[in-house]
Image (cartoon, rainbow, N blue to C red; front, top):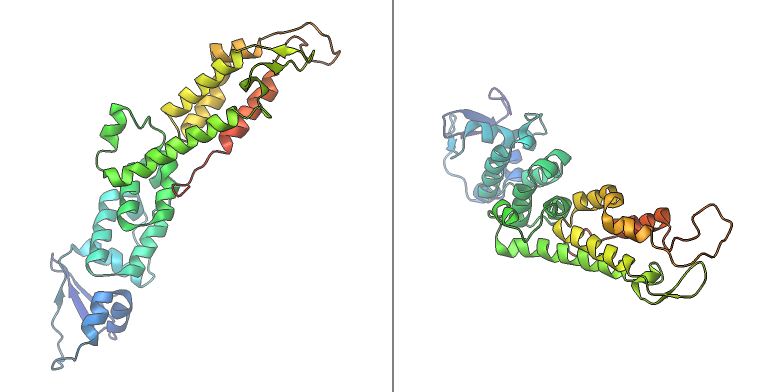
Length: 285
């Protein structure tokens, strides 16, 4: 991409007057627009080719050409959403699909996903990059999507693109509800249930109260942060304390745990976390 490259036979001129010499063959391979242009019958040849004006800043042109030539680009290029927007717009205008593929891969960086998830989700939806949208969707679910705060955060996103997030949030909550209602894992979900100590029917409802709190918490934050918060904070909930303190009988098994408890705390928490870890994370279902 050097301006002094003798073999380069095309000159691009940015809107701020910077000239870039580039090989016609490489430019044609990188840009569908220029490939079409150079497939047309050539005009009279000149020893001093006329620069082709490009309506983009020289920095944007330089970023695109660096990617085309496999040269280093600014290390923080893909940490700046404004720069990325300009690069994407440039590539779209000049049909540089290969550069866009590089951009698509670069956008799946953890720092972008964490710090600019709503912007990245909007870009991914506009470009049709399903894998990028999937990668960032779970970060977008770290909001109560029905709250006024979320409406403000997601305002730049169209309703069409917002609906898949709502659908994923709903699928996660419904899947969690189904798992909590599975009486083969959580027998107390279908009272009366058998007391594991004395094998008599038990009408204890503390598990159902805890179940309602679990679903409420996930509903308010369906993403990974919500799962993490439940896993960490659950031990301090009054609903949790009531559930793991529930007693039914005084049958003594001589094992190392409290024989009066209907719900073993460690086992119950392990099952809840396992259910949370198995929730859907893909927009496509």
